[in-house]
Length: 288
Image 1 (tube, rainbow, N blue to C red):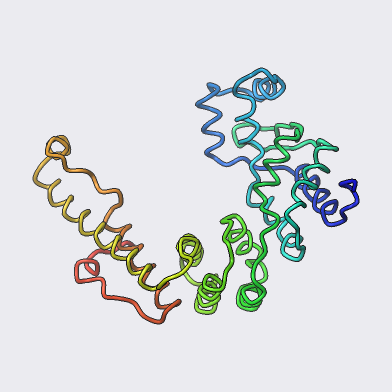
Image 2: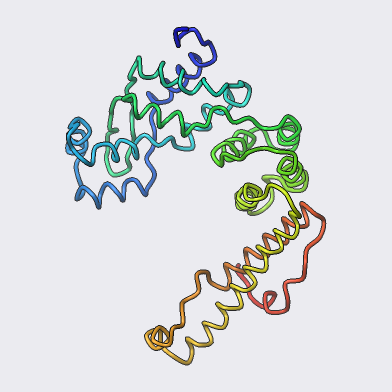
């Protein structure tokens, strides 16, 4: 079968091509990489690197430039959410894009004009892989999200779940439904909470989710206690002396650790209706 015969894949490829023409905005980290790697290049130098197939930096540069930004994901998500793709469909979409080799407009804040390059076949394959088009949410979870979240935020939630490559099973579906029933985007730090929950849920397949969440909480309690202990040692000795004594700097500050503890408490209550005491030390540290 010719790849153009697949209607849903042809529709998606057309949407991707249209979005590529609109443009991708490179993240700040990409601009920093370009500045440091190519010694503050002008746009002409980048074009010459992209056009030189023998340049060892070419492929990594193209890969960075063609990383879909949030606007790209959000533009495609309404179609991806309502369309079910099969495992063979990504290859079909790649086939369609490779036949066209569409131009891509990339906006870099370090330049006044966009950089334009062609979507070569291997880059099309990587782009489609990053879109994770075969991911589908559970109908019950979709119903909760659509009924509980504001219309303008629903697609952002689906994009976050899709980009996490989260496998949706009964346990994960139940926990996510509980989360969205208890919290919504109007609440402070909602997106941070959602990011944590998605990461936490992706790590559990079975067992007692509450106990696993409390284990994560105790990790941060220990981190906050060590950070406080370290600050007391710093008040008596300089950093060089502590290093000679084998004392390591904390990986996370006390305030940030307590913020994580508070977030876990709120999430535990949302998911399970209870949480464990954090101990007196954690309540004496603020983060506002």
